[in-house]
Amino acid sequence: MRGITPTRTAGKPEAMHPTAPSKHRLALVCLLLALLLGLQSCQRKPDVQEEIKKLQATDKDVREAAVKALVQIGQPAVEPLIKALKTDNPSVQAAAARALGLIGDKRAVMPLIDMMKNSYNLELMHEVFLALSQIGDEQTCDALKKAIRGSNTIVSRYAKKILAQSGLCKSKKNKKKKKK
Image (cartoon, rainbow, N blue to C red; front, side, top):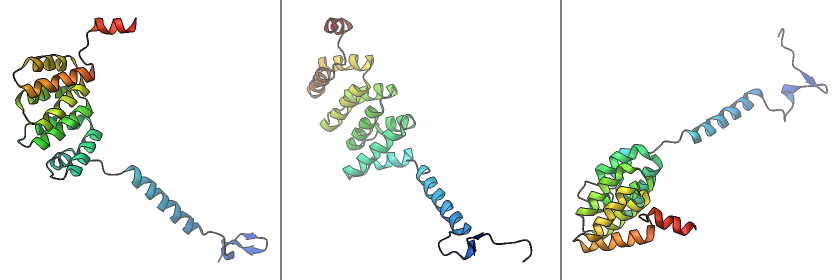
């Protein structure tokens, strides 16, 4: 073999040393590590429509996992969640309201207010009011104040409770007095 001379260390060729890693093994180990590390960063992201379908599951844990995934998705999930509020299933509506509240996008305020006005389901009402308090803007305050004066006693009680607990609609004058 002309031109190829094994390197010698202390009189022994490197290729003959039993503990010396071969270049091929080292390259293979590096490749495997790169693949493993690369796969961790390329984990599949949740699909909005897939997760919306999971809101229909009868298993509460499946619905909760879908809510968490939709919250992780964030802004792109808002419109599909608003559409989910319009289904006939109160469990789906409640899960969608919970996700919308956690995302905190103001686009959800009016659809949630509409839900508040038109529902008598306690679980759903709780989630809608909680979502509205989490988003908390001026429209929410106005809607809650109207709900207190409304004819639906369930809605009125929830509205009072949310207003008291959240401190959403405190006037600027009251906030200034507290600071002094």
